[in-house]
Image 1: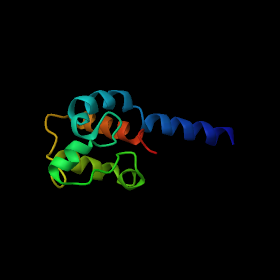
Image 2: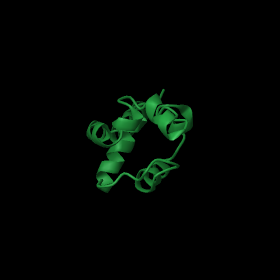
Image 3: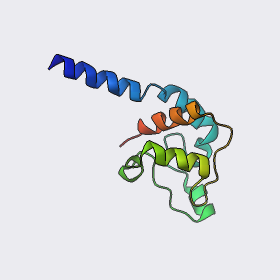
Image 4: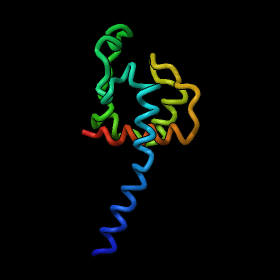
Length: 102
């Protein structure tokens, strides 16, 4: 039982390893529209006539990492692609977004 518990916590720690770095990237590239906690900014949603789901919501958190990567690289709806990010930075942002789970 102890081995399983240690393995579980080790895996969880590795999965969120880039979250602190991802928060920094999120603050510079995403926060202006998505808000500091991923809640979405009402003024931006109204301006673009879209519904912004909180990034911590079940609907958004159900997306795979590959889904997030495609959205970041290719955009989604009226959201433009985010440019100038390395694969590592994208992985870090995804790790940070995972910490917003409600």
